[in-house]
Image 1 (cartoon, rainbow over the protein chains, first blue to last red):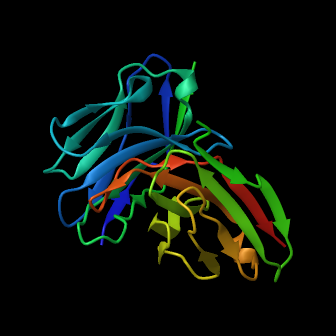
Image 2: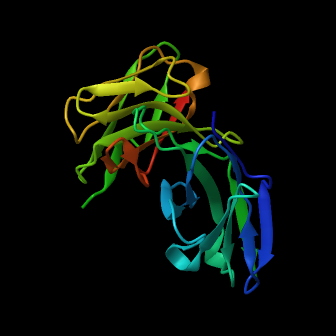
Length: 117
Length: 115
């Protein structure tokens, strides 16, 4: 079974400061990892993904994430937070399987990011 | 491209009523899925499809049916609504090749209340 943990329900950060939203995963096999953002009353938007290659992945809106296999983590980061980054962030994991099954995507419970002036 | 569209945006049902949530995508994605989002529980997979005529159950399929007659459409049917099905429902689609799916594109959601 695969699972994702987002240990913080909420993260508060001042505008201009760096931000980190944490994600750890548990899978059997090599994971595909994703970050999504959800603004109020909207669907989820894809931010970035790790499939293979460089452990530091860059995505939309200045976000990046670092894949750490030994710590089974995929933390989301941004060097300088903006008030407009305030939203709900979801980490998700999939283990690809050539036997089919649709490669189900498992989501974390989400972390509310609040960026204040 | 409209991306993934869902109708209706809001719906109120009485216990025991049935209804269909519509989902359509114009990206020619083979993989489509339905999730429900409940506070503190993230998104949970209800049903998914890897192509027309092929559907399978996700994590929480009870009380829901799906069918996939075309690549574009993936409706979700509630057979007999229950208060426990009060939730926000999201449809998503993604590119699918050689048994592997990639990032998913989500619709705007349907907020369903069952009284």
